[in-house]
Every structure is written in structure tokens, then in C-alpha cells.
Amino acid sequence: MAKIVNTYFNWNDIEDEARLSAMRHGLAVRRQDPNTNRSYFENLSITLFPSNVDRNNFNLAMDMQLPINAMMNNIGNDHNFVKTVLNDLLQVDEFTSKLYNIDRKIRKEGIAADHALGLFRSDYIIDKYNLLKQVEINAISVGFAGLAPSIEQFHRYTMKQFKNYTDTELDEAIPKNESLKNIAQALIDSHQIYGKSNSAILVVIEKNVINIMDQKAIEWKIRELSNDSIRIHRRAFHELDNHLFLGPNKELMLNIVNNQNQVQETEISIVYFRTAYSPIDFEYENSWDIRLLIEQSRAIKCPSAAFQLAGVKKFQSVLNDETILKKYINVEYSHLMNNIWKTFMPFYSVNDANLKLLDQKPLGFVLKPNREGGGNNYFGYDVRPKYLKIMESDEAKAYTLMEYIDQPTVNGYILKPSSKLVEQQPGIEIKTELGVFGAILASTKTNELKFNRNIGHLLRSKSATSDEVGVMAGDGALDSPYLTL
Image 1 (spheres, rainbow, N blue to C red):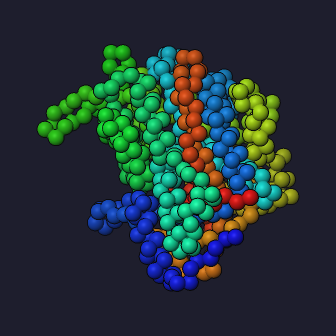
Image 2 (cartoon, rainbow, N blue to C red):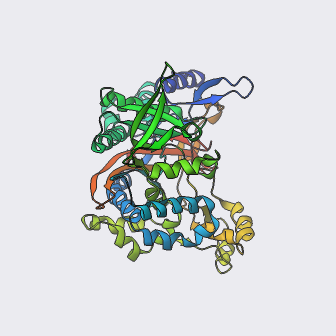
Image 3 (cartoon, rainbow, N blue to C red):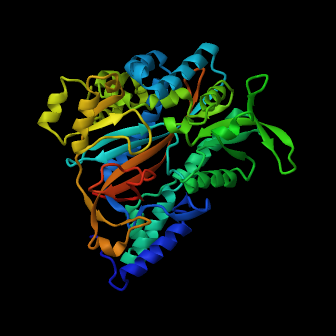
């Protein structure tokens, strides 16, 4: 039976303790004061307690990640399939077209890298019928693998402190999350397979990183697990211009200026992108040239252009065809193929013929562009005006119409920087979204998987009145699952 908050505590004290504990666990973001240009930290949006998640659906989502990882590899390596699926989109979406052209050029030249690293996250909603439904698969700069274990530890503390749960009760209901250790280990193992002990990992970042603690948690864990034997360099695109070049055998070399103003050449083993998923990330004039240079190198890319293309949302509308999906599920996972197929929602093209669907169910669809990151979709009454605007234009090719996933709500508390817990009594209705992290290292020559791993999970929540769940977009909050039957 669920326990209530101990009446010994008042809500102001709970909030103060929760905010301090969140900071202790690194659950924070870095902001910049526009007036002084000085940076400061504030709490990341989080839930006060873990949210109920059906145990069977959680286990199913975890089980499906290995075949999904392999599926992404199979799609990324089927260039003809990628071209066929994305053909209409390439005519109207400059971002996807440039990425595709880089991949095509690399294949024509011959792929220099021996391996490609994929770090994925499959996102799901458990619908009102208690069925697991796929929201999307993220293929680049997947967030919060670094902080997901921290929110678990935070919730273990709040449940013990404010609800009197025991360690035994929590161990039974809150699954251990090792996404931080596992994502760091995937990067370490890939670095070692690259085979140059004196090489370094390059993390390509935004100009101003808000979600800094998630990124740094991974870097610090790499250093811890490798006994500080792996160097890591963080650079934005504009900082790489004129400092990145190819060696005689297509090694990716980075000029490092040391504290004595001397330039040292460092070979890069892995390029780990924590940006480059949106047109705004390529505002710097030479960004695309730098991305091409990276792809032309021997360095392991995370992700490669091929893996990033496999994550384009357009594939969802194709893979919900059972015959097509079966082609990309490895035979050793055939027993899970039907489970995966059942997670797909129906998709429809944006055209005059499908307008009748909106007439029949005005609030029953989501209009989705092919973009990573939160805040891009259209929901509810915003769908029809946008649909009508683009329906007879080329822009329609850049969107798909997906049936809305209707889900039940749970009661909880969301602690945002500007919110007050005392104003949320007796709790608010929230909706959750489950994510599962996966990692693969694939040979670019043989398609063989050097490793294929399920590396952890993530739960995000939002107010029931909100449509998006992106934490960095400002709508969602980090959460962790409390498994129920």
C-alpha cells in the first residue's frame, strides 16, 4: 500500500530539503545571467517522489532494447532503404538533406572508420489500455543517461525521509539504474577497440551548455573507470575550425593549445556528439564542413551520419508495417518482433485525403516533424491549423500524422525552479514517459556488432495539462519508476 507524506514535516521544509538534496546529487542546470554574463546553477526540474510504472511493461521495454539497437544498425547500413524512405523529405528538409549528402559522400569515398558507436534511447508511453506504445527512438545526443541514477538516489532519499519507506521496500520497487556507469563503459570500450592508448575522446558541444551536469557526469565516470587514462576534450563547432585536420591515414587530429601556449597534435579516437541534432546547432558558418571532415576520418563517430539518419522520425511511419519491420529485426530476436511491432502507433501522410481523420477525431492526433529535441510537435487544437497550412505545399513532406497516445495520469509533485510544493496540494495529475538506453559498437566493414547492450532507463514526467515531456525544453521533469503490478 502506498504511504503518505509524514505529517511531521511542513511543505516549506520538504521543499528546501529536496532542493538541497537535488543539488547534492548533481540534479542541476547551468544558466547565464543576460545582464552580468555570469553563470549560475539552479535545480533541474524533477519529481519529488518516483512515479508508478507497470512492472510488466517496464520489463518488456528493457527486453526490446537489444533488438532495437540491432535494428538501428541494420537500417543505417541499408543505404538504399534510407534513400527510399527519406526521398520526399530530402526534397524539402535542408538539414536532413545535408546529413544524407555527407553519408552518401562518405560511402562513395569509402568509409575510413572501422567502427560506429550508437547510443540510443527508445521512448514509450503506457496507454490507457496498459499497452506499451513507442513515442520515438533518439539516435543522437541522448540526454540524461548521466543523471538518471542520480534521480533514483534522490528518490530513495525522499521516500525514506518523508514517507518512511525502508531500504527493503525500495529495493523491491525501484529498479537499480546503472546508465551512467554503462554509458561511460561503452565509450571506454570503444576507445580501447580503436586501439591507440594515447588518443583522446572529443565531445562536440553546444556553444552554451545548459545540461552541463549530465554531460560532465559521464566524463567524470570515464575518468574514474579508466583510472584517468583517457583524455577528454570538449569543443563547440566554432572552436574546432582550423584546429581539426586529417592525418596521413585519415586519423582525426586536434590541435590542443597547452598552458604554455604551445600547440600539441592529439589523435581523436571517438567523436561524441552532444549537439548537431537541429539546424540551430549548425549556425556557425563552417559547421557542416567540420561535420564532413569528422565523418571522413578514422575516428569512431557517436553517432555516425548513418546512425543519425536511422533515427529520423520518418522511419516510424514505415516500420509500423510488420513486413518491413521483420526485415530489420535480427533472427535471434525474432521472438520479440511481434512485441516491438505492437508498440508502433498508426501513421498517416499529410494530404487532403487524410484531412477527414482530423474531422472525425480533432484531438486524436499529433503532427510530427522530423526533428530531435523537444518542443517541435503539434498537439490538440494546434494540429488542424498547421495541417491546413502545409497540406498542399512541399512542407507536408516533412511531417507525419501520428495517432495520439491517450494515457492515464498519476498523482505526484513536480519541483521546478519557479514552483512551490505547497501550491500543489494534494498533488497534481502527471503523465510519464519511459525511456530505455541502448549501446552498440558496429563494424562498418562487416555490419558485425562488437557489443550490443541495454545500458539503463529513464523516466520523465510532465503535468497532465502539458503536451511535451522534454526536460530541457522546459516542459518535463526527471523522474524514476516505482514498479507496480
